[in-house]
Length: 141
Image (cartoon, rainbow, N blue to C red; front, side):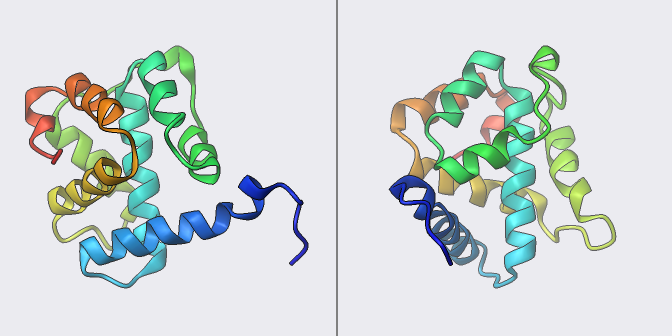
C-alpha cells in the first residue's frame, strides 16, 4: 500500500486496529464488524449528547481516523441532542444492530467507556463524565 509520507496518516489504520483489538478483548468477542459498529455508535451517541464545545474537546483526544468517524454525520446546530437518559442512550447505540441486537447493551457501552477511560486524558474523561446525567454516569468507569 502506498504511504502518504505523513506519519499520523500512515499510522492511522494501525491505531484504529489497536483500539478495536482492545475493545474486542474487553467484550470477550471477536467480531470486528460488530466491534466497529459498537465503537462508532457509542461515539456518535456521546457526541450528540455533549455540547458542541465538549464534543470538540473530546474529539481532540481521539486518533485522527477515529476523529473522522466521530464527526461523521455531525450537525453542530443540533447539539446537544437527545438521547439524554440512560435507556434512550442504550437504545440509540443498539439501534445500529437492527436484526441482531446486542445481548447486553449496557455492558457493551460500558466497555467502550472503559476503553475511552484508558485512551484519553483523565481530565477529558472527567469532563465527559460531568456532562452525563446521573443515570448515564453509571455506564462510565
